[in-house]
Length: 389
Image 1 (cartoon, rainbow, N blue to C red):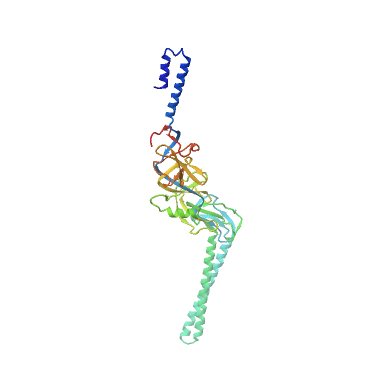
Image 2 (cartoon, rainbow, N blue to C red; image 1 turned 120 degrees about the horizontal axis):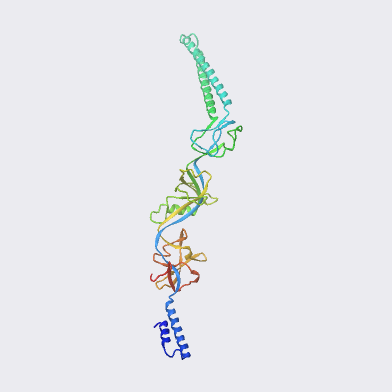
């Protein structure tokens, strides 16, 4: 009989109002019964519990990177002179072969004229030598003059041929230099900063280029990782069963957004830097919207894929010195402190070694400061009591 039923019965008894000592005794009996009922209801400390299941996860690695166009070309003059025209502006997109700068060409036009005059002169000398050789040939055949005269005439002809070839080479060189007075884009891309202005004297020995032309239809992102990370990556990048590194990498931009197009690692420097103990790798990204430019920075995000990982919230683990522990429930809902091995992080969860925890294990996820080994737990999940394993 419940205590509230006894209380109702007590009020119905005729002697209830006549015997205060009896009333006091009945109240003590009811209080004792109530305490016993409370002890029966208290089945342990009510705390949230998570039942572990295998699920896909990704362990992420981040590395600082710098962006460069697939072609970053320094535009430098091939000839000296006064900068006469600038056909483009900083930031313009130009096509391959488009004129960029014009150097005063008048001195090179005059040099070309002089070279052509020398070609004409040497051509005339060659004709004269040929005429002389032709004149002497009948005399030599009739033995009117000695063979020495013939050899001398032939040598003069060969000298005239060589002189003409030299003059023609100088003419071609002058023609090339004249062409260099118009500087054209060697590739399609975006114009960088232009430090010079019209009227400046420019030389091919200047340390600073006229501008830098960047082809950013695709971009390279260079980043460095430690020797241990590189060995780990090389060991697992072709693992087809578990812990495989994704073939794609992501780029986190300076504003925190993830770049829309995935990239892939296509090269490495081939050597470790002995001073830093790191190796440089290169990832290539398509850049159809030309959002990325040379000089951008970001973070390369590499993901190691776990197809069937055991995850626990980071808040479910406690640290003791350099080790991590969780409280696992046994079949009687009693806590057992257990050391765990952490293989990585996926979001706000730890990726746990299969040797540490298994599927269907139950762990306490909060209130850990109240726990030790052997504490009775009343499991709660999503605000409801868990009645089974």
